[in-house]
Length: 125
Image (cartoon, rainbow, N blue to C red; front, side):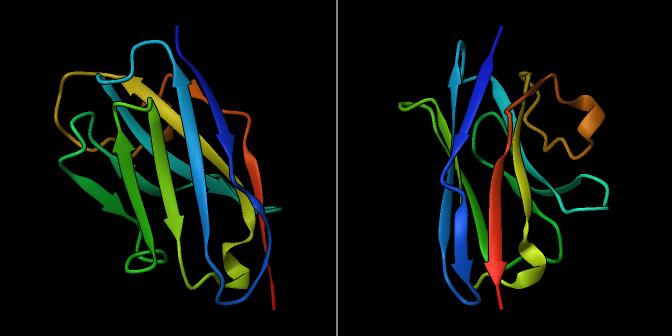
């Protein structure tokens, strides 16, 4: 069983940066992970994903070039560095994980087995 705990959210102004962290309990090196976000009145959407090896990543177009996902197996933590934040980035951000040995990026929410409780990110204009 894996438990995920996010941190690092907050209220910032347009153009600012935040780094979200997601720390996992349990086996971490075989976790393929992702950050999803859900804005009020909208469906949960994938922002970024990373393979269990950390060797490959995926970014949705709206965050490409601004967000960076990384995985530190020594610290059991996945990060989402968010730069040049915009008001449209305002959402609850969720960390997700799936145990796998397939070195592919998993992009569908239904394929993830473990979820964190979410952390609020609010970007003011």
